[in-house]
Image (cartoon, rainbow, N blue to C red):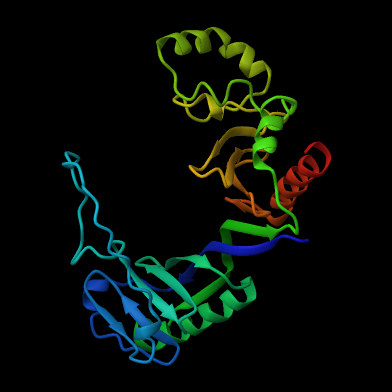
Length: 278
């Protein structure tokens, strides 16, 4: 079974465009651009209204917020300084004032994304800026989530026990136990700082001992969900931390900022552990 891309996030850039969404409150919908949203304007194609998911209303008891709230533009329902475009009901593109854009929750290929962006380029040239040009070289992934479904159940209890005991070559010592420094841990760490540097550990976050890792110790943290049907593993073999979700049902999700080759390494590693040690 091979890994398949579940969702991704991308960034890119349109050149020769600079706008203020406050003045763009008469943009029309089209057959390609079916929804437009900003903090000052919202319109949707009537044929697509029923397809757009409405946010779930969840009643929660909130504590009194003493933090200073950030500045909100208009109705505050969207990101500031941007307009969101829904292209053919398939992809949302957040376009910012300087021409940069983001696409999140994407479930299609890079080629398909490029096609949708070109449709948006045509719309921008007609209604916002006639000189706007999509810089295709700027389009890149910033997040790639992969998934795979094995044809057998996984004993995640045994998997966690193996990684926490016999699999010490994978896991950072005490990473499960010591998660935040108290005064004693800070003193201990300061004494060992030079030694840790010599071992090629990477300093990330002084509040979390799990973030001190080397190339050989890439499992940072493990935890179960309440019903123990999911084992969550935080790992960092490469430049960023990824989340590996191993389900009892045999499903494995590998989420984070990564390439296919990096996700494949984590998949082959966890599969080898499951096949040879459980």
